[in-house]
Length: 419
Image (tube, rainbow, N blue to C red; front, top):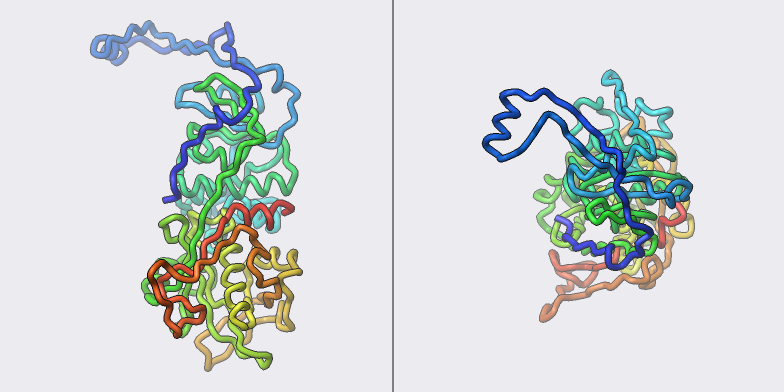
């Protein structure tokens, strides 16, 4: 689990205004019958058939206020959904279960853009019909369809694991900023994602206050990289989430990433023939679905690339993953396409790696390898206390010992603010 954090925006953010309740109540009526009488008798509840609720009024400051992200939060029954109606109604999403979810969008390009934005980056999941998705996948798919300017998202992250909630909030934040969306309203009984989503304003119905959270400090995530020797055991955790194949070359070197104490990603490297010197390429790169959207995969890849280039090796990756290809094409200062980029994979009957009908892109890492070139807050740990590294390891660190620790949020801010 991602480490829990107490969120005290009430003490660190400016109060815009206090909320006031309307003098006109909302009234719902039901029949008084045997069931309601039982509640009256056993729970000392005086009920006459009427439910009366005094909703909060819309503050005048919000009538013409310009914002990109607004969060409405509060306990269940506090009136969040009623308050959200001031900004519109949540869009009803209809799915055609005879089609894959990627085919339920305006275009495949729109689907890829929005599904990645909600952290649903698993290509196998894109090809499934909506009715077979897990609860977490369905939440992200619905969110992708609703994500646009003037959207209202009710019960945001209420039905998913908190890891999914935080990763989804992180990726949505980047998408809204990149697409310059306006007046996106998120309604939730949870508050743990607020310093990840970083809204402009928070309306807290528990406190009956509206807060200006534009200066709220964004949560920082710490990630650590290790080399593992139990490759088969680790691969069994990740193989069903890889978009291409469930095979792993036993000769590969395998590295894993931990978010706090939770295993979240793996990267396998194998030797690559190159007349220009010792070379390696990425064999498998997988991030567990619950953690997709935090920027772990890209950051993990950069750190492995930097370690190999520091060791005097050439570093390559060949991928069909749209998100990776887009990132590398955009950041040409760190990645250059090779001659084979965009060419069809050959069928090699002698090879363990038999893939055809794909046109993947190939890149070589050319970025600076000095500490801090990609992430100025990176701290490399060469060895643990009272520990002597073995010479057999490429980086002077024995297997299962930490290779590096870095600040994921600082990396995301430097690489993705303009995306």
